[in-house]
Amino acid sequence: MKILSLIAIGFFCIVVFFIGGFPLSEGYNPVKPNADTKFSGAYNEDNFNKITIGMDSTEVLNLIGEPIGKLPRYASFKPLWFYSVNKESESGDFAWLKRAIVFGRNGKVREVQKSVRYE
Image 1 (cartoon, rainbow, N blue to C red):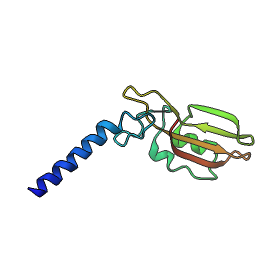
Image 2 (tube, rainbow, N blue to C red):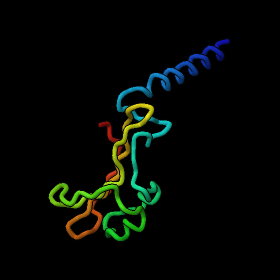
Image 3 (spheres, one colour):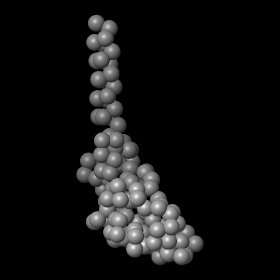
Image 4 (tube, one colour):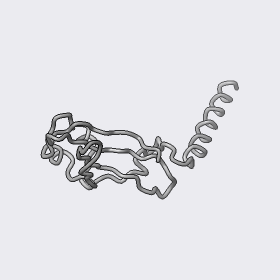
């Protein structure tokens, strides 16, 4: 009887988390983390993870294609290519996955930005 009570309490906690946790504004969606993220057309997470410091822009384009946008002057005039943006999800307002590449003045990858954004 005690085991059944523990199972029932555990099940109740899980249900409350999923029903009560998802509607939170800018909450992280553990079932579908990219629910509020729009990626560029050829974006692939596995290929994004292959990008390393020192690659040139041609290598980046071969791996993940054209970015959604480019900011020519980001952080001390270093170009920023972004591969994801915040979009409005139909089921709520969730955190989104930021994916961007910062290039140095030499045209090589200086930084790979990969984070969860709560904005």
